[in-house]
Length: 54
Image (cartoon, rainbow, N blue to C red; front, side):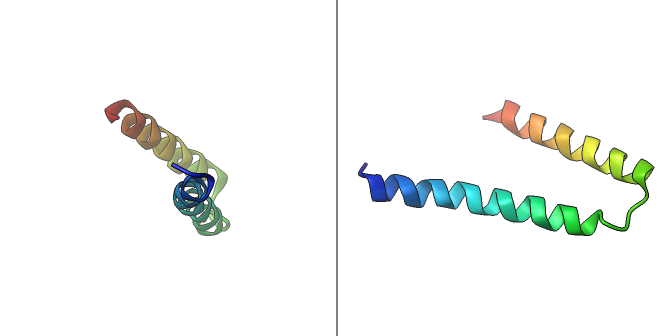
């Protein structure tokens, strides 16, 4: 794998992750703090579960 293939692979991983963070931030902007905390805990639990499956 050369440097360009690695860069494209990395961009393919990083870009959706950054987009997810931005969309989540915008979606939670007007949410009550208590609800926001519950949603973020749920997302963190989902990420941990997905990482455990690999």
